[in-house]
Length: 482
Image 1 (tube, rainbow, N blue to C red):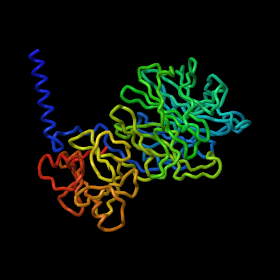
Image 2 (cartoon, rainbow, N blue to C red; image 1 turned 90 degrees about the vertical axis):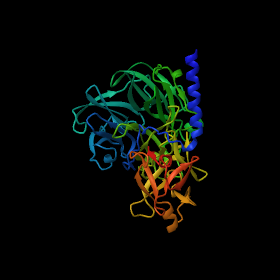
Image 3 (cartoon, rainbow, N blue to C red; image 1 turned 180 degrees about the vertical axis):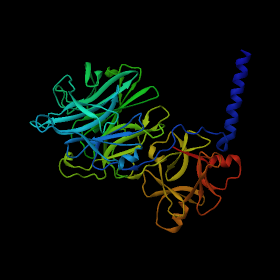
Image 4 (cartoon, one colour; image 1 turned 30 degrees about the horizontal axis):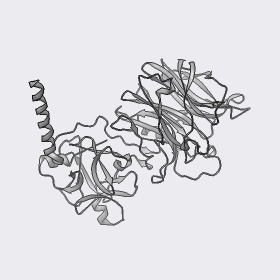
């Protein structure tokens, strides 16, 4: 009893000391497990329904729907950005007649038990809307030069409109998820899951996980399609696309425990609102049909998706060829759920900057004042693009992700988010020298361009431009890019 009392007393002392230390405390946060990764969007023009797979051979393999809907193409590169300029190879072409002769859609590439598999959807020359799911099997180390054989149609409960097959393994069990028209429902497609007997055959009775019933799932068409799975922290998250393939297209999400019976619909909960949707601020419309991959260092999850750079479409969206492949980093909330933010603007993707001495706090704007804060919502308030400095001469400027054209700048030595007014004063106030972190060289410190020796630092959680002199000051002026 006495030992427990002493422990309690010591714990109280530690808590009181932490409170007394306040915002200037010098406690060091750990270097982030998931450092910043940046890419330049779009990755590929006129490539929809993108799928990027990182293989153990060090290559990323990329496939997507081509606007002619007539073939399956592959690219490979050692980096995600490298896929932008990688040579493209056609590995399979639609049949001249019969099944697999029209509407070649949504290919995915997977490596299973020593062989390559491509899952795709196709119609028939006699009925282009008789969309069904098919599988190709590739033999060879490099799928661009492999020998491909048709394994046929994936048979499900009904001979009805079905597409967007994806496969994944959870706790050693391989599953197939897909979208299909349930003849008993008044909608276009619902989501289904089943275990697999082999890479082209399901086993057991498929389970229906979701049907489009919410208002944002039924605009234009009543659609749940394009399932994609990501695992994190003992949970599985299945994103899917909803509504028509125009600016209303968006992502929803289902969540389950990784230890649950994933073929039991009761194991899954459904998001009440879209988790990723169009953004007029960044001019990105109809983001959807996503997949997931990982960064080159394996430390960040990356969202892969398509969208368009304009809202208004003339005619049927399926006849508009300008869906393009894009990527951006996935962030994880404190509760272990993913936060996809908004589809970011074209060009370099943004980063987040966490505090050296408050690991859960990130630079963000709130009512245009810059501060550090935990559990930032919306995520984009804490995302900034590091672009060439407005003042030039080796500087950088930090542009808001959700207010393009607005930059962090100092004013009366306080840091604010303001729109670039084109003046030389603004350019100078919004430009900084990126330095090695004053408290940790693995971090970053930003020195004012026009006030040498003054750095961006937090004080009482608000950002200022000040001259750091103490160890605590240097900690407050150090951040980690994430």
